[in-house]
Each structure stands twice: as C-alpha cells, then as structure tokens.
Image (tube, rainbow, N blue to C red; front, side, top):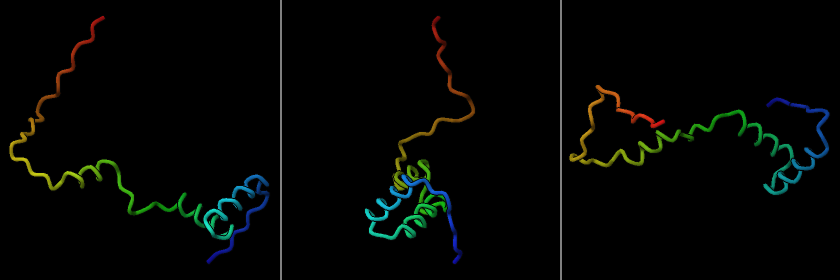
Length: 81
C-alpha cells in the first residue's frame, strides 16, 4: 500500500470528514479511502438504465406483439403557427 499525505485541508472539510467517519464507525483514514474509491473506481455491478430494463423484460414472450418495420422514419406532425 502507498502512503498519501494531504496538506492544507480546510478545517471545515476536516470537521465534516471526522463527522462522516464517526457516522460510519470508521477512522478518518478509512473514510477518505472509501470516498476516493467510490469517486474513482467504477462499480462493476452498476449498469445503465437500458441494461436494467432489458433484464427486467427479457423473459416476457408475447407472440402477439408485432414489431413495426424500421425502413421508414416516423412522421412528425407539423406545428401550427
């Protein structure tokens, strides 16, 4: 593991860090590690909305649902002026 020293931390920031660490029952050092990891390392279990939506409906099978052809763009109604 590496050692990181951060100088010139605003006293208010240090106070908030101390409170957050106490709320989470960890040391200030552990709280900083947690904050840095959450900010910089992507959560591999996090997925986008489309992926979650697909997973939710992937098992539905409705043979009566007909997907319209995609060879033509939908018509947009003209705006009245």
